[in-house]
Length: 459
Picture 1 (tube, helix red, strand yellow):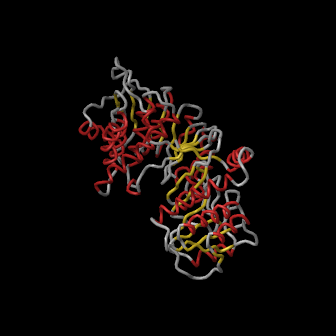
Picture 2: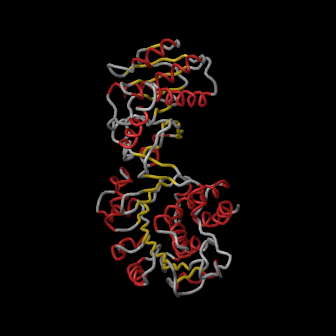
Picture 3: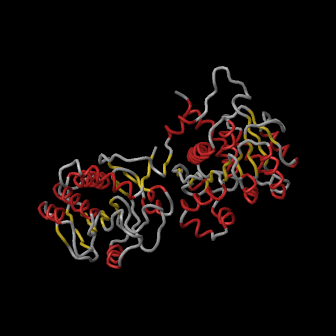
């Protein structure tokens, strides 16, 4: 599990550790991890040219000490001091190792180390930092802890900021490493363990082992009903394919039975593709809304009346209030969530985490906000971010498959929070697997699920 802690949590953990360590030991741990990460990126140090962009805080100190390490291994290291003060010990170490302090100007470097602003900095950059970055545009950047200028605790990006190729962070991930749009500015993220003792994190990201542990497995005496029955109310005469794709996600093999109770116009398509799917009856979860068109409200009302967990998507999201307080997963994209919260889409995309949390509180349900980094939020504020996926997943009908998959997980007994976050992880991973053969469509994602699940469930 990747865990992302707040600045306040990190500061408290650092203070506790500093009280037990010799002076300067914690910075030396961080600087060593940073230095070796830069060395790995370069492949070798001798003769390489490294630029340090140094602010007044501890991140600047980390950069200076890392620069000293690289200089001792033969790199030519230059520091541009972007504040009136710099970490004295780090600056002395750099000079003692043969590094130098230079004046901002155009020059050829192999890598730039961003030590401008630490995790306590405000979003945006001062003019001198912006000018320095303009001078080295196009050179690979390694950010110290977080890219300078992003909002660490929210993932927002406001004003000028660093866009890194690699971010080397210390002790734990921070929200900006996982949540867009800031996550896009981080590049690859490398975590250096510096020995922090941290509390529970407000934001998490499931990994393959976590998903494998949460996946349902049949008991030795299982039958189709004990494994869970998922019902699908999706599709319409206008969008019959939505029914087929929703059923394809639900019929991934995790649940024991799939029932289709949707528009007759889609029934023949469903039966032809999935002869194992049966008609209406009792279920343990409903998937409602994909392509439902004018039938969405009726589908939500009938499904709520059954008293089982729900997945509500697409057209049915307009009636999500009918399920308020019930075990439910709402699966909007940014445009749909904007309508649900009566805000501009740009506001949703600028602060995905906050708006997913707000919607979860408003509707008293788990909200899955689709995106490059999908956010799953609970009404109590807990959140998970999906780090699997591929740009090829931005294709029509992919959300229909996701809804069916989450419904199958709900039917097996997973909580709405686990079903949504596991389903989202599987959805992204299956798309990545399918895309190895080239561009994909939504049906390819569903078709890749059995092979993916086999990998995760086979000892």
